[in-house]
Length: 119
Length: 110
Image (cartoon, rainbow over all chains, first blue to last red; front, side, top):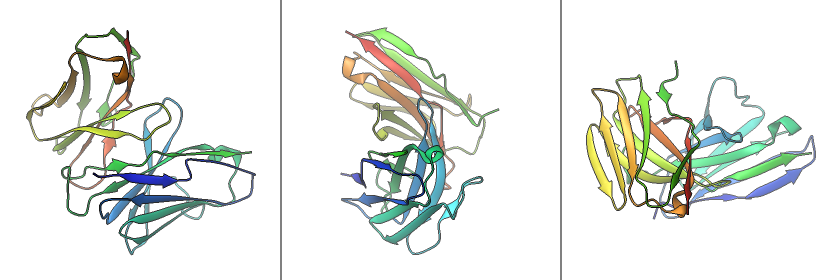
C-alpha cells in the first residue's frame, strides 16, 4: 500500500520549453502533496506544499510563476516547469500524505522521482 | 546551526555487521520521527516511523528516539549488500512539513 507514481521518470527538453510532471497517489487519497528538488549527493529541498482544491504554498526563494503547481483531485498533483533553462535541470520528487493518516502523523510517501535535463 | 544534523558519511561496513545511523536535532517541538532509505536515482522509501521517545523494531531494523538528548538512531542488524543506500532521517512537529537530515551514504561490502 501507499504507492505514489510519477510521470515521466525522465525528460529531456530544450531551453525555453515547458515541462509537466504528474504525481499520483495510486491506492490512497491525499489532500496534501509536496514537491521537492534534489541535487546530486544532497538532501531533499522542499519547493512547495500542494493542497487539493487550493493554491500551493511555496517555500522562500522558489518562483511560483516558474514552478506552477496544480492539485486538482485527491490523487493527482502536477508540477509544470515553465520556460525551462539548464539551471532547472535536477531530480524532482513528489510525496503525498494519506488523508486517513496511515503510516503516522506527517508521514509522507514518495514517488520515484523525475530526472529533468534541460539542454 | 541546522535544525537536523546528520553525518553524510560515507560509511562502509562489511556484510553482517551492525550498522548505527544517527541524527541530532535542536527543535524540542519535534514529536514524529522517520527514517527513509533512498537508492540511487530513486525516491525515498519509508523504513520506520516513531512517535515520541522509545524504541521500535521491524525485522532487522530498530529505531530509537531519545527526546531528552534530541537524538535518534537507526540500527541495522545482519547488514546485507542490498542495504547499501542513503539513509535520511526526517522529523516533524505535527505541522505537516518534514525536516530532513542531510542523509548518510552507506555501503555494505560483501
